[in-house]
Amino acid sequence: MNMSHVDDGTLHAYLDGELSPAEAQGIDAHLAQCPGCRARRDEERALIARADELLALAAPPLSPGRGAAPFQPGDLKPPARLWWRVRLPLAWAATVALALGTGWYLGGHAFLARAPHVAADAQLDSTARELAAPALAARAPQRSRAAPTPVPQHADTAAPQPLAGAAVPAPLPLAIERRAVRESVVAAPTAGGRAAAVSVRPSLVAGNAKEAAPSPPEAVPITLDSARRLLGQDPVALPGVPIRALLHERVIGAAVVVVEQALDSTAVITLRERRGAPGLLVSDAVAPRGERRDRRDSVVARAAAPPPTAAQVVEERGHPALERGDLRVEISGPLPADSLKRLLERVRPVKP
Amino acid sequence: MPEDLADVYRTTYRALVRFLYRKVWDAERAEDLAQEAFARALVHRPENARGWLFVVAANMARDEARRAARERRHLTLLKGEPVSAPPSDEAVHAESDRSRVRLALERLSPRDREVLLLWDSGLSYEEIAAQTGLAHGAVGTTLARARRRLVEAFEAETKDEHVARG
Image (cartoon, rainbow over all chains, first blue to last red; front, side):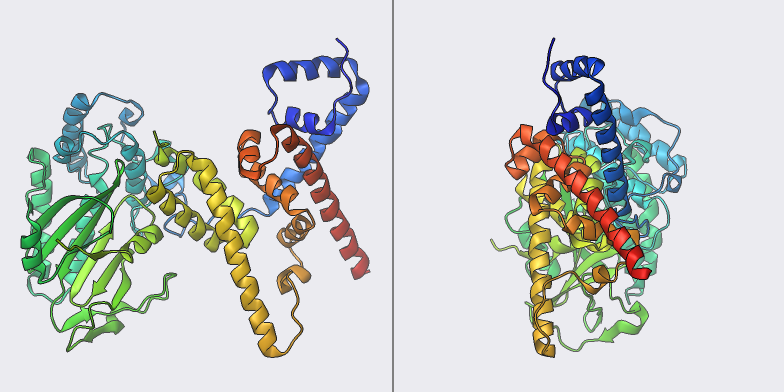
């Protein structure tokens, strides 16, 4: 077979592995008989290597400190289970998830599985597992910025990805968020706050192991009117995104309305909304990229609530929160913290 | 059916950051833009998320560069200095390899640079062709030229520097 010599474009495509098998074989055959082209192949191969080298010099430095950067393999302590690689039918997954949830708690992991959601979220597909489980993994170490963050490359070594068609993974970051919310409730100036932190967690744990209802024991579905009454104003939500659930979460010392919205079948955003204690609100005016004053310095007494349109996105221990008047809104979901903050800026009151 | 965005995120996030970094030359900004691109993808749910993300990222970086250039011009106008185009001070006084590569990249034509960066970010010839409008067969040719010019520009710079230093 006689072929004309190989032109540069084809040679690079060949070296890049971008030729079809048939085309590549043709080149191989030609190279076998053509020392000139073989020499060019070697030169171009060296050129590609050199170009790659230079480009690598101009690659972004990895910054493990940032919330969204890939975590290092050593950060995780995955349990000795290999279930996450297996895809099982949903019915199976439900029982597995419950067992996994209990097992996790008993295993002393920091993660609490909200197994109850399995029933409610049967239609979620397995990709939520991918989204949420890395978020878990990102939370495993005690980080200052513990926002649930999808992790790009190390999902294989990530914390347990329960197989459930996602139902279990999706709520996991929420369960962890709840714990963090408890912690921030402790910081709030209500006497019952600390008690709330202590008393709620055991119930979360106990409830999760046995719960079969679609909601955790302390959150009850309510109507929009009830939500309005609880908050003293319209609850806020992301406009144009369906509200999947509206719940009243019983927290000592506060009335918390939970708005769950599904961005799509794999991404559920949770807004936790509560009336701030009148007269005393944490006030950090925060620029999107972390000019954060120390919280202790910035607790101010406010005699009057600012106008309803004035809203500030603050950041407390890495959880984006919004204060609009005396409404405090926290957001959580399987997205990087910065995306969550951006979403938070878009919330609007829900009108009938 | 829309692509599995979670898989895309896992396989493409770092590549997108890499791609953006070569445009904004700020690691944190690159990560921010990448996250914003993914946030938009969650809302828009494009059919071909990977391709869409790189297009969106390129646009965002370009808009950002224009904004930055405008700001620079305003600042220099305010100072009463003549308006000059980039490169920045850092590039002019390039010391590190990173800066040299950046300079070398800037010597490429926009299309050659784009194709090279997309390839380096892990896109296939087919994806590159789709994004840049090149014919599939032209991608290899463009890459060949881009690589050659990059290496030549880098080595020319290094040589100039040595000469300048004496």
